[in-house]
Image (cartoon, rainbow, N blue to C red; front, side, top):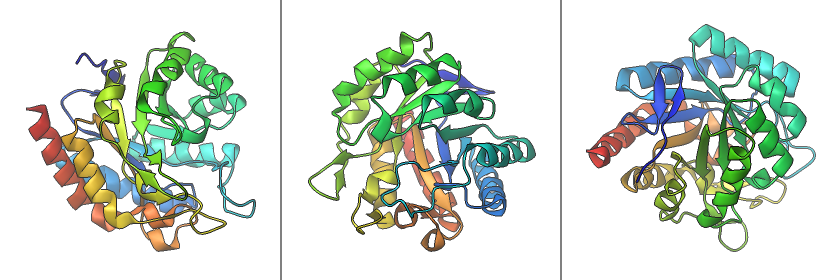
Length: 273
């Protein structure tokens, strides 16, 4: 299968070295950002893994209007820029509206399209026109085959620096299931496929005014995705997930990241061989 390699700084996503996108779900404080970025950089450098730091300046799709959303675009991008400069890391962040694409592109190396918004044409076009890498997360409501037209929206907007992410599929109420056939199916569109191991254990809306999740299953899904041939992995990581202000139940603890990353790298390299 011919998969385009997406160049980012001095490495390529989709090549023979594992790439991991990871960081806190949402920006809570500069201290948490820096602490997480520093540790994850140390781990990935030690293991020989490409690393992109992730956090969101806004979580516009929270279940409740009272849920914590983040510091907003202006302050959030300032905070991400500090991480980028201090730790010399590429950054990925979500955008939710077309007008956020240009300012976010001034800081982020990858613009991420949230799963709920993956079919929004204006959002995809705006992201594409920045010239940055665009990571389209597959909607929980879509079959993997349905990602083709969404990829074409970005391509037809003049951008072929595309990543596609699977984050599970709706299975009845308040549950997700992962069909690992989605990885080779979406690779068939010619771009690297990322597996989001933490959102895939989410239980959407299960807590009434917020989503639940079960982080116990993150390692199983991450390892299975490597065995299925995924090109990269996505994890939300927090120093203290149980105290996190968003997605705590499905985030992995910073202290547990190294062991999991190493196992995933071993499987990735075995499959690549």
